[in-house]
Length: 370
Image 1: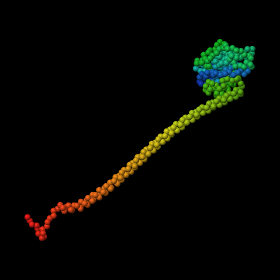
Image 2 (image 1 turned 30 degrees about the vertical axis):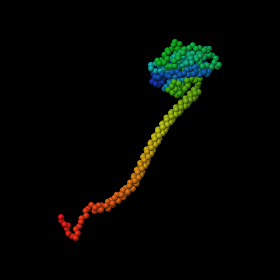
Image 3 (image 1 turned 60 degrees about the vertical axis):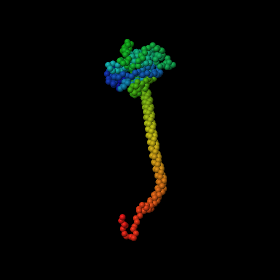
Image 4 (image 1 turned 180 degrees about the vertical axis):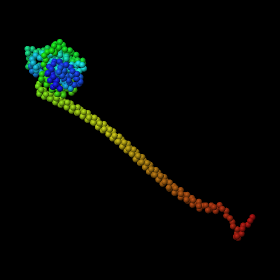
């Protein structure tokens, strides 16, 4: 898809792309830019690397689109010819969609949506440097240049600054409109992005870490020292992707360790609760055993007490029996003696009580009647 875009941009050579309608996808055509139905993320905050060589011009990073927004790093670029400046690309909101307006090289900086890209691109024009006598002079107030190597420099702090970080022009974003000079610049002779710029954009689209859906508006690589050739760029992008994957792996491992610690803590808490429950159950069993033992001892004491009582009762009965037996025997003996005496005395008493009858003498005759 990006190859098609780049080819069309190279063929068309247009400064400003016309919007077209798409639905959460990219559409490309002659004179038509890329469009999406969601707004690009804000411009990230990043540092500008030092200018690698005299004559290079800073091209700020921007959000491109290929089934999702991805960040094309800002980079120092050798201009295609002397005397040209870079007009950055921008997104414009129109008719409910966000259309991409491609960047270009030209003798003047045109309209780039009023977007504050920083480093001299404050929303209108370019104040990071200027051409003079066939050489590019750098404004060190906004451009990171080693003055010990590059001597054609100056300082100018008087330039337009837009503090907004919106990445698109239109409702909900930057509401700037082209000024007179920007409108005239649109009619200048323009040169499309260089081969290195297109390679950087293409390679960025192949790096998943550059996509907003993965980096949440904080790209892994926000800027580069220079837009180098394709092989070197691919190597750096691959290395950055590897580093990003390593960071993600470390993050995942850290999250796993945290989850493991939480699981271990929960398991430890469960084991502690189980031990406490077991300890409470053990104490309850011990209390029950002690209670049973006490009841058993009480029953044994009661049995012993009853046995002792029975023994006491038996002793008392035996004592009473012993006490009763001699008295009874003596009484029985006395009774027996008394009965014997009575038996012996009874006939004599009866004889005493009966009157003796006198029988007649001479025998046989009845007594004389009176």
